[in-house]
Image 1 (cartoon, rainbow, N blue to C red):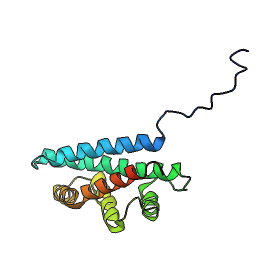
Image 2: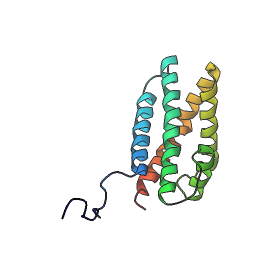
Image 3: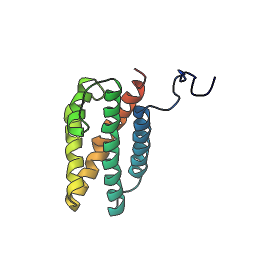
Amino acid sequence: MTGYDREPSREPSHEPSRFHLALEQYERALQRLHEVLTLSETDVVRDALIQRFEFTFEMAWKAMYRWLRERAIAVDDSAYTVLPVALRHRLISDEAGWAQMRQQRNLTSRTYREALAIEVAAYVRASGVQLLDDALATLKSRADE
């Protein structure tokens, strides 16, 4: 029997799924956001906080997208379409909070104004990071459903 005559292996793959990879990226991004939240706010720290908030938000909705797609739930690849579907599937629970977070993220990615940066940084500290923490906990607890 040659190598070409053998049947393909039917052993389960030990490669992490796309969802698990997205979840790991989300968790690392959130850890980086928490790091900057421990620092006293200066212009530089505020800019770092906003940048880390932006990429953590991106990793959050993309992890939700991967969770949904892994379960054959049809959803387009955008935060605008993923968040309502994630809400229906109980990956997030605060609809208004996530709508506000998406709005805050969109404001910071288009232009820089110091007053807006101060507002967004305050939002992240006051409630944005808690929503991100809650979503990560939910995704981790439901990872193997």
